[in-house]
Length: 583
Image 1 (cartoon, one colour):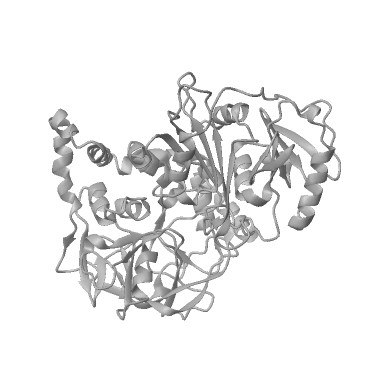
Image 2: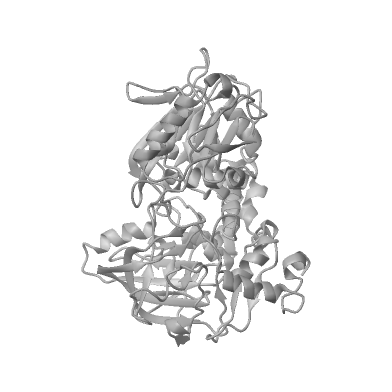
């Protein structure tokens, strides 16, 4: 099922309905959100409302300036209040083993729920407006979980459920949670949306759906009346069990780690339910379109949340958190030579706020009144950046800090570093458009590829240890002749320079998912002045695979061959991989 999904998604195909799933009486559906046009269509009636409410949040006076324009938005706000139902639609029950046991990648630790909406309340509260609803993956079977009695609950840094978990550790109350699967698409989007802390996911779900969020209570557990399935249970405050591995959205496996256990109370489902699932992996995948829609909704709210910030873009093909691009205003000292000042303030605000704090590489440019830069057009963005950045001044490191749970490039689990690259001013270099003629390589470094103007990818010896890496990279740098590097601003050391330099997707994925700024950034003419590291250039990033990195996702060849047959002329899915856009 996962391989079929991947192939149909890759060609922009339709949502997929799996009517008869082996060993399961429930049908399944995936790829509901799998194209830009489809996800826009799903929310076409309510997105204008959400954007209008966002504008009113930024400037309430707009309702007085354009009352008729915003009146409908104000009226639609009635959907924001959740509604309690006295009779639940969750009238049927089953067991965990009865649910579709979908394993996406061959080394996955078991089947997972990948579009769950996990509900929790703080201790002592029955106020649903204080509920947190987040999307945290659920492992249904495998490892040491007792079948039908226990499931794994995985959540990461900066998640609302973590706050509740901390509160329950000092409370005598049982930590009850509910896992909703399916229901309106708006509920899944609300669970993943980076909402302000003063705005409930239930409010957002109702507004997006154009219908109030309906819930009921049974045995002290909260049930969504619009979901297809609900798993209720109590989180064990003491015991943990290994969860994973899991093929995740960075394109690697997240490894096995101890996470909380959810002791299953009951599994409910509605009449004729459909199991909603997706498949994640190296982006872009179906979840990428959630990111696209989130950006469309919040882009007008960004200036209020981050004063001075004009644009921000988490790069999906680089795994989202590894690379964040931004453009900000630079207004501090307009009467003197331009240099990064206000944009550094903005960058620190970004790295100190919610989900954006997980960014590993933050490249921020000062807005240029004379040259508009498209933050989504990587060639022009990086040309502008590399022609102006001064590596001796503009790199600012944060070491020994927390990073994304799924990023294994650092020196430990959740542990790594960050770097701000701030760029402001006039061009300081012209970028090379061909490999320098006199460039000579040695020590096993070979196959240089000029990926883009000023960017060179070089195949490098296999990484062994950081001690060995420092030695060989420093030798590599000492053997370079700066006169032969004119126009080269950035060198990426990698395992396969032809693969890395084949396209922007490969380049961004390899460079930013396989490097830890504090350990893997080098430079020609490097020096430390009063604890500030810089280099005269070019900057060098060691993006080779390291022994501590998580394995790259690869499909099971046996499964792939079976699906090849299904898509062949004699198979039941012939034509879907090529003609699915028209179905």
